Length: 358
Image 1 (cartoon, helix red, strand yellow):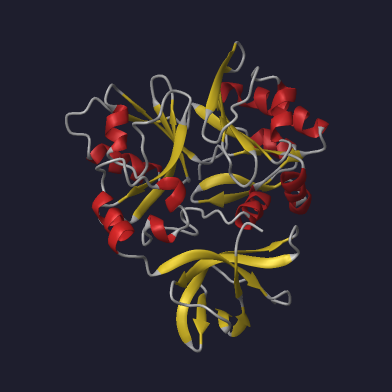
Image 2: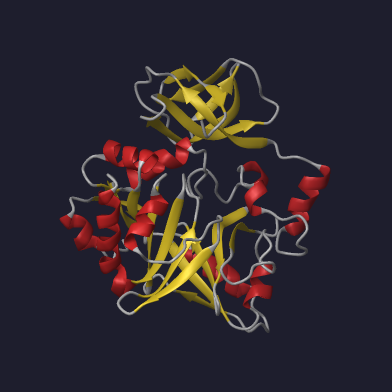
């Protein structure tokens, strides 16, 4: 398991750890509900350094990546980014990616556990291109301030004179202690800013940000609260709500991740054909679950209507904010109306499609 660079610092603040795709993450700091409350109503500081971070360098980096992913990389100027998917020639997901255009590199940020696969996939298509693919996770950490008062926290920490105002834009600051720091407007579950910082300066910055977070009544936040907020916002996570069996159009990410005007890339023919001539057979959506559930459905639990399998659950939580049990999952496109049941173990429970976020 890959240990967090700030493991001891987190432990000193009461962290309890868990594992996600062979990467260590902070599960909580002792009170996941209070952490979730801070995340939804004030602001919270998170260590997202368990996520994968890869850089593309070389003169051909932009043209090369443009031909590999579903969104338009060529249009990005320095200080801009986009969300995209890496898909196979048959259009199936290999990973989703946050892509940022730095002065000399393209920075990719994505889910843990697929670094080697993503690097291998990219290098497979480097023929005569001046492109190098580098795992930068050992050198740069990723902190995140999330919540409705995230901007106030960043202002209190005085990292920048002005914050990036639009999603997927970023600003760079150079600090004599921290080094080059990138502050990105990255809407994860709410208003949030991701901060890429050299590993050597992570603890110094974490302490500075924590002081600013606590000044507005927030605090540290772990994985459990982050997952609750993600599902409440209806945001799919690769490896949980979307995987190698899915097309991007099934996953609720098409509007954000796919350009149909950018030109050729691996998998483009399949995705464009679906867009212009066809449709997908299933769609990711939200569900309301009964309040008296004895246990939440697990990933893969099947959904039935009139005894016929019509879908399956991918993520399920109890939402303290909504005071409801909710889930994400896939449902066949033609299915509608009442009578949906989810089978959990030996029990069946009624469920109802809902629109997320709520």
